[in-house]
Image (cartoon, rainbow, N blue to C red; front, top):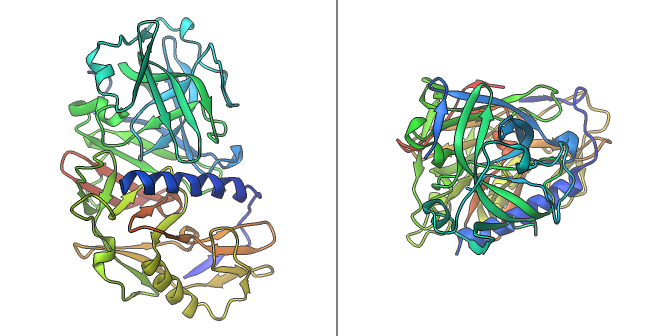
Amino acid sequence: MIINLKTTTHKTRVSSRIKRDINRVTFLLNKLNKQTQIATEASFGSDVVSGTEEGSGEYFVRIGIGSPANYQYMVIDSGSDIVWIQCEPCDQCYNQTDPIFNPATSASFIGVSCSSSVCNQLDDVVACRKGRCGYQVAYGDGSYTKGILALETITIGRTIIQDTAIGCGHWNEGMFVGAAGLLGLGGGPMSFVGQLGAQTDGAFGYCLISRGTGSSGSLEFGRQAMPVDAMWVPLIHNPFYPSFYYVSLSGLGVGGIQVPISEEIFQLTDIGTGGVVMDTGTAITRLPTIAYNAFRDAFIALTTNLPRATGVSIFDTCYDLNGFVTVRVPTVSFYFSGGQILTFPARNFLIPIDDVGTFCFAFAPSPTGLTIIGNIQQEGIQISIDGTNGFVGFGPNVC
């Protein structure tokens, strides 16, 4: 496989992105080891853009909030459930690209009472605030949002979704960087996908555009968004953590050869630990240490022709490619239990770390048995989640 280095540009934002990524993974490791109306066609969606220009390692979608629609950038997050935005009056808010949403300007904003069935679905209900249902969400990097729950109209593309339960955050802090809030796409009932329910049949798909390309990806909801010719892999249900999307990874490959790693390393245990989670909110894929070491060593063995560089942050395998126009690197693949093989383009596993030609192998070890497939490995690949039938599809299209 050949990677073209001449067209690669990179602004030095890696440090803050990795810091947030480390904290998010720590949060996931700790957590996992421990009625809507739609005026639309059968499927709908919007463009997805990289948050790189805002210094974020995440992906944003532009969504209209309220009536009339007030458009905001939201982080798409397959690893959480709550949909929330920053709201006026803002007692504590971080900087965002768009003006902060003011619910007083929306004709469709309705506060949720503490006794409502919607409020009872929250995992972490806080005390009532003037009779309104309170919510709070804490993330692994110390970021958090806290405010009241409301029903509001959301506009995505030309589609209007009424009475969507959202968090209206009056106290928010953290490394969300530019986005107004978060669109939770997890498997729980309070996620955006969960609230759409049977009307989209639990189906959605996304394509995360590769960073630095200047173009946009996509986020689509509905059965019609499911491609016919995708490589379909079973989703695995974890009753302890039903909001997360687990897949049946069985092995790793380098240079077209499967690395000798026991399949048991990637399996979900009877008590809900371990397993393999797909997460759009994590950038760097994490592998159990034993699996990572074997995987990394296999890659190093086939790249002895490339000059090495000192490790950077969580990356221990880096290369000094300053002055190279193209380099030849071995392929990297994921093997799934049904025999499917997903082979990645070079940009999904050898990434620029600075502006002077340092590239690193974009994987890191995990201190527990949990594997997290991050958004760098998902970039450029059409990914489809069929929650109703229990499958995730890869391809056939790219973006």
